[in-house]
Length: 270
Image (cartoon, one colour):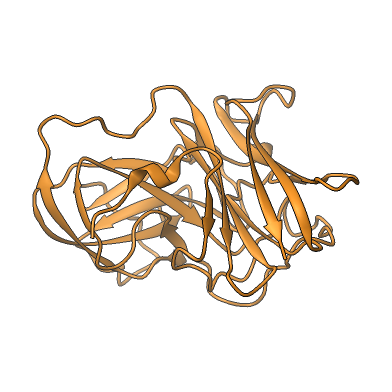
């Protein structure tokens, strides 16, 4: 089955899980920040670095723009400045198992692709064939964290000579509501294209952190969530009703500046 990349347009609402409903929650703004009543607290469980637009068994065509996610309150942190706590940067492993020694830094080669600037995507350009892909988080010294994905086996059916890769040259962000079919609890995913995500405290020029506003359309005050520790998702459980969600990526140096156009979507809670 081929992947429909158009599902990742701005403001897209996905009905149903994309295979990661097992993530239990996300904590905005760090562990010291009190939770909003609508926010689902992180529960004990393994965190994951994962693909948001790939699943095991997919058949894809090259070039393919792969997107990354991060669960359980973990956040992205570029390697330019150290960041403690639940932080790291993504790595894509191609046809490689997890390292046997997590006390050794990850190598730099075609099978261990590093995203040390806080990137959330990459364009794959693999020859036709079968591949095993997985994501792995590591710290600023490239030492692996125990935050990774299960291996995904994908088939590259063909490599197209002329095709518009769905990468964007203009920096942009996307907001996705991953809605459960039987629960009022739902996950909200954030994505940044051609942009870097990091901790506010790092103050790295060109990097930003996500900020989410959830406004009840029936009236009332909006809930505001500031993801200053580089988080890229949150789980919410607001009262029944219709909501407008607005996402921005705030500059980590200039708090009055957005690094991309604000995006919006709606969510209906039964």
